[in-house]
Amino acid sequence: MRQRNIKNLQERIDANSTHLVREPEQMKGRWHELFGNDRPVFLEIGSGKGKFISERAERLKEYNYIACEGQDNVCLRVLEKAEEADRDNLKVMMKYIHDIHEIFENGELEGMFLNFSDPWPKERHAKRRLTHRNNLKGFFDVMRPGGVIEFKTDNDDLFEFSIGEIEDQGYEILEFTRDLHEEGCTYLSKEFMTEYEERFMTLGKNINYVKFRKPQD
Ligand SMILES: C[S@@+](CC[C@H](N)C(=O)[O-])C[C@H]1O[C@@H](n2cnc3c(N)ncnc32)[C@H](O)[C@@H]1O
Image (cartoon, rainbow, N blue to C red; front, top):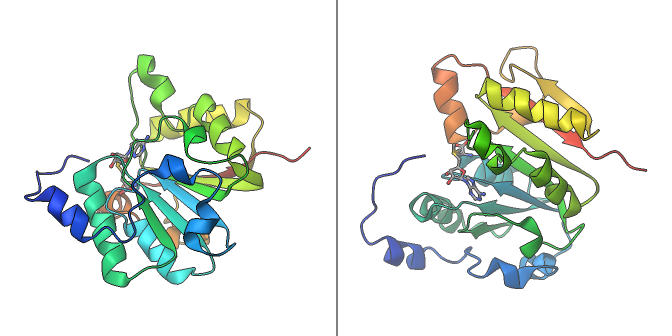
C-alpha cells in the first residue's frame, strides 16, 4: 500500500495516540490487563487503514481487537478511526511483526485475521509470506487451542500457495471459497470488508477466503 507522505506525521500520531501501544513487547502475557477485561482477543496483521478491524470492533463488542500495521503513515488512519470512535476494545500496534513470540505469550490470542497480505511473489521471498508454514506455526503457538485464522486475498497465486501450506501442515479448513462475495455465500467475513477488498470488488475481482485451525489432539 503506497501512501503519500503525511505532513506533521509524528504530531498527528501523538494527537491520536490513546489506543496506541508503543512498546507491544512489554505487553507479552498481559494483553488482557491492557484491555481491563477477560474478553477474547483477536489480532489483525497488516491492518492497512483499519476499516475491517474498526468495523468489527464496533459491531462485535464482546471481543477485544489489536490492529497491527507496520507503515506509520498508514497506521495513523487506524489510530484516527479509533480515537474518533472512542473505541475501548481496540488497541493499535505500529510495527512490522517478524517474530510473533516476542509480542504474545503462547495461547494468549483467540484468533487472527490476515487480510490481503503482501504476496511476496518471488520464490526466494516465500518465507516472508504471512501464510508460509513457519509463520502459521508461530501464529498457532500464540492462539488458544482451537483458535482460528481467517485469510482473505485477491491474489489467486498467493491463495494457492497458502492452501498448500495449510493442507501440508494438516490444519483443518472450516470455511473456504474462491468467491466470498457471490450471492449464495453466507460467511460472516463478507460483512466486514477491507479497503483493498472494496477496491478489488469494484474491479470485479473474485475474493478468496479460508478459515482454518489446528486440529486438537
Ligand atoms: C496489501 S496491504 C492490505 C491492507 C489491508 N489489510 C486491506 O486489506 O486493505 C498489506 C498491509 O500489511 C502491512 N504489513 C505487511 N506485513 C506486515 C507485518 N509483518 N506486520 C505488520 N504489518 C504488515 C503493510 O504495511 C500493508 O499496509
